Length: 165
Image (cartoon, rainbow, N blue to C red; front, side, top):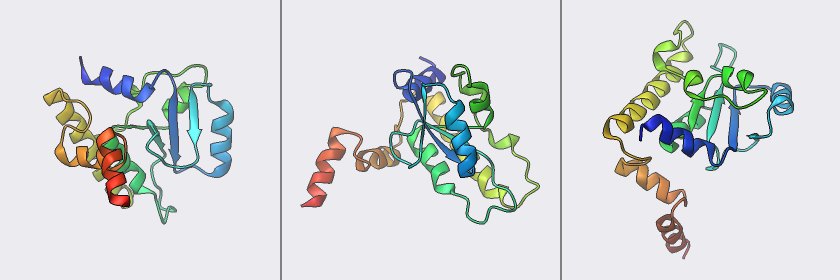
């Protein structure tokens, strides 16, 4: 099965999309929530249930941009999408692939975009690795450990219970 199909099924989780917005004002988030179809659930808090991260790139005005959320997309397999995905998904949810960020599509005029592009490059390289090796999420042992410690597997729940003692 092609990885894009696997990614879509992972992200969709039964036709329901848990979305986290990055780089938006509270008013913009409110407007987005109001216009989204029922399948898209915009979350206020970052959690392991997030399947899609919609990012407005940082500008010169952004002093503290939440790059950690983008790293989450790298290690979790969540989609890292452009705002255009939400715009096109107003009637019904459209496929993510056309709206996914690519590191070579980011203009580096702003110094703050250097780190943004660096994370996108990392995101792209791990996706490419998964495609070439046709492996499922967290095939890399390091990411598998992150997944286990995040309490997303039975092994993770047991390990967490042991650590609490």
